[in-house]
Image (cartoon, rainbow, N blue to C red):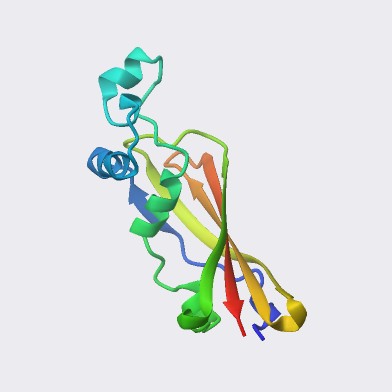
Amino acid sequence: MIDHSHIGAETEEVSILVEQSQLKLFCQATGETNAVFWDAEAARAAGLDGVPTPPTYAQTLLNLSPFPTNLVLDVMQVDLARMLHGEQAFEHHHPIRVGDTLRLKQRVADIYDKKGGALEFIVLETVARNQDDVLCCTLKSVAVVRN
């Protein structure tokens, strides 16, 4: 069983610059065809004050800026072979734009079990703030651990 005292554990903050080239690669990989996500002229023509990112791009930014300490693997020492991704959710508060520097911090929001402890669930919450300390996005993921 995963020790519930890990609830509330946090990572160090990491930063990442939102780069146009990485965003364009993401759009190509996902089949995104709306030019406002990679072309500043198209974004301006659409009335936007910068090149925005698609709704799920925050996860890519999180993946590109790993925390020095992984809460699940390093702190809780969960066996990766017994774990799978169970859920992902995004709550958007403010647009993430090309040129922003996002600061990311993650915490263990909850740990619970089902099926008499056969399955354990680790809820991670990551907050993304821009260079002006504006909360842009809250990412929630759930890891499922089979015992």
